[in-house]
Figure 1 (spheres, helix red, strand yellow):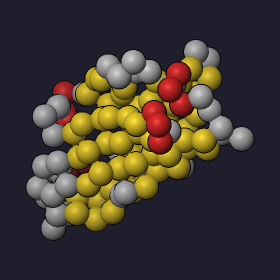
Figure 2 (cartoon, helix red, strand yellow; figure 1 turned 90 degrees about the horizontal axis):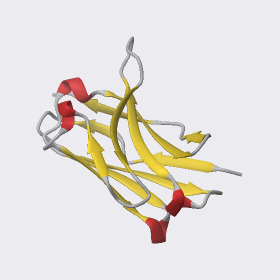
Figure 3 (cartoon, one colour; figure 1 turned 90 degrees about the vertical axis):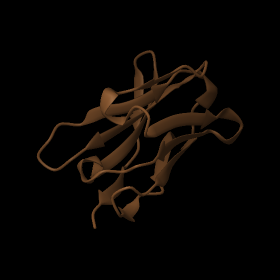
Length: 115
């Protein structure tokens, strides 16, 4: 049974930091491309950052220089370090694992940036 479990969300003030964690089970984690997506109320889900099985990363322009995706294959875990958070970063953040036609999603974790 495949499971992706996100954690680390919460309420933070503008300028603050959070680290999201996605723990995977039931897959050969090291073979999977992993991604973080987010969905704000009334908006479509969008890619935030991704990391290949080889460790190459991609961050969308709106988070470059503020967010960093990383992975620890020994722990079957992918992280999203979020710094300098802005109110517009408020969303539910989802973890996704992809391998060819196989795609798995976590349940999401809420991030709220507000004073």
